[in-house]
Length: 286
Image (tube, rainbow, N blue to C red):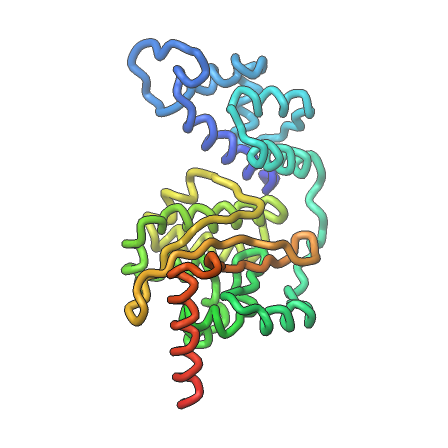
């Protein structure tokens, strides 16, 4: 049986190899090529490995690469710092037998974090390791809608992003970028436990029903923690452009707090406050 971490390592190597072109690493393209990206033998040559050894790594077969080999592969693949850490995480885990029991206790939001959410005057949510929505504040509800409109097992940022009833959201100019950020966070979570039932269920469902997800997941991007900018199209007040950042909470791996902010005194901050006031008024009249 293939070691789950070795399989994940092989998928990552294959995706990163297909991303490179010969001219990226100083090679001549040569004649007609059957593959996009580098050939296995080209990557093995750049890393100073035998083609057979590298092929077995990509196939997830029983290999235990040394740190020197991993360093050589990271250089040959032109990996960034996060990608390099991901490579080492997977390879080190693949060297060890799978533990008989992984820590899969239910994720809990500390009471102190719940209090912080309630007093935070900007949209904020707590996401579990597999991007499940664990808690949120009223400002987030005003911006994102009422989460309790969905069954608990559907309250997941990836499932919501690829929900067929919300395809209008994909007209936003940075939709794919944010989808890749969330997918990268899921990849980092999978690297800590490739067989976790929640990850398997989410990735399996989206892989079956969404060609967009399959395309983006195959890129094998990884994000440890992310930040960015998102445009929210809110008919009542107009577009709101917010910065967003993630803050890790205690635990390894643990939940993260995702916080949306606008520059003080900006038009976006004014629109956000107007939206919050409208939401509070509607809530009071229910």
